[in-house]
Length: 192
Image (cartoon, rainbow, N blue to C red; front, side, top):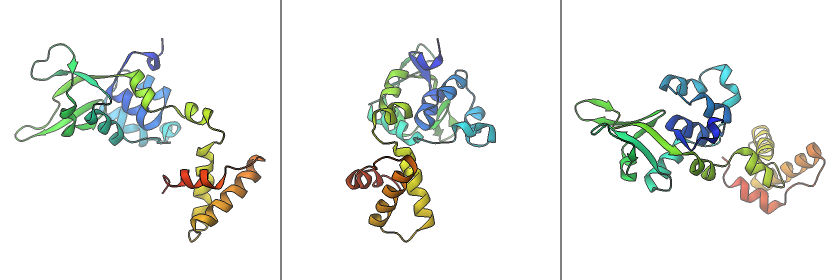
């Protein structure tokens, strides 16, 4: 069975999924180290995983809100796995595979070890690229690339001019009808 199908993921696997939606990274971080996680964006060999689709802050927010639950071993009791209260995430810093907190006298500490999250909950909240593009009539990732190209070549274009150019370029590249103006506007609201 693939680690992608495991019931629980460690914090590095969950973070890799949220940030990159990569099956390969989920498998790679089955036994993670902090340096291995940091290396994702530092080395050319990691270029397959460089397309970020999310941010660790999204995972932090979900943990704090309680919409995603994590379990770990408390450093105080170091006993069995227990649910980490959502309020704990307010001052924990995600540093996959760990979550650290600044202690007044001891510096950075790891109040929880062996952190686990339910993989199904992570995959449900942060869908894979295949799932999101597979259901859409248009490949919005490609349309975003067209948008970015046109915007970089013509930085003074208004949103209306950008939409006209995007729709024309999409039609030329893919030889099919482009998305309507309102769909473009709706998606562009989330693009910088």
